[in-house]
Amino acid sequence: MRNAFIETLCELAQKDERIWLLAGDIGYSVLERFSQLFPARYVNMGVAEQNMTSVAAGLALEGNIVFTYSIANFPVMRCLEQIRNDVCYHNLNVKVVAVGGGLAYGAAGYTHHAVEDLAVMRSMPNMTVLAPGDPMEVRQATRAIVNWQGPCYLRLGKGGEPIVHRAEPAFTIGKSIVIREGNDVTLISTGGILSEVISAAEQLAPQIQARVLSVPTVKPLDEVELLKAAKETRLLATVEEHSAVGGLGSAVSQVLCATSRVRDFDFLMLSLNDAPQQTAGSQFYFRELSGLDSAQIAQTVRKHLDEMLGSSSQAPSFIV
Image (cartoon, rainbow, N blue to C red; front, side, top):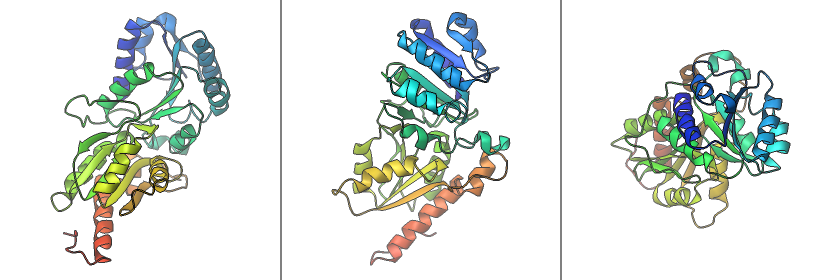
C-alpha cells in the first residue's frame, strides 16, 4: 500500500506544485522517489511529529496541500493536539498519512499498534477518514484527498497487501464498493483486512451467499449502501483490525440504530478486544489470535447464522 501511495503522490505532484510531503524521519526506500523529484517540496522533519503537524498547517495556510507521513500512531497520537487545534480547527488542507494501520507493525509491540486511530480521527471536527482495502483503493483514495477540501486521515497498510480488485474501482469519498454480491450476509470491511474478508466469503459459499462491502471511507460513511444491505440480507457483520470501540463497527451501528426504517436483521462486530495486546508478533499472528483470519471470520458468521435460524421456525441449518 505504501508504494502505491508514494507512486500516486509523485504523479499528482508532477502536475500540482501545491503538493508537499513532510516525513517524521522514516520512509527510507519508499519516500526517496518523492524527495528526489521534488526536493523543494519535501522535508524530513525528524522525530518531531508535533512540529511536523504545525509546519504542515502553516504551509497549508499559504495555499498548499500538505501530506504528513509516519508510522502507525506517531502522526496521530503523538501530535493529536496539533491536529485538533492547528489543522482541524482551521479546516486546513493537511492530509495525515499513517503507514502500518492496525497490527501491521505487530512485532514492534503495542507502541506501534494503530488500533484506536479510526476512533480518534473520526471524532476530530472537519476530518475525513479513509482506510483503503488494497493498493488499487490506495491509489484512488490518494487522488481523491488531493481534490478534497479540508483535513484527511489516510490509513495505509505496511506493504505486501494483495490486490483484490481486477480493475480500479469507481471511487468516491463517502461511498463504499460492492466487491461481491450475496443475499444471506453482508460482510463490511475497512482497511487492509479486506483480503481476509473476501477469502471468508469464498469459504462460506455456496451454502451462504455473502455480500462483501469494502468501506474505504469511514467518515463520511455510506449510509445508503448500509441501509440497502440491512434490508436485503439477514445479517450484517463488520470486520476491522481496530478496537471494538469507535471504529467501523461503532460507526455502522450508529447509522443502523438511527433509522426506524430497517428492523429485520442481525448485527455482528468482528474486531479487536478493547485491551492492549501484551505480546509481540506478526500481523497474521494477531489476526489469528483475535479471530480475524479468514477461517475464523467464516466460522463466526456461519455459527451466528445457524443460531439465528435455529431460534426461528426457519430451517435448514447453515452448518456444513
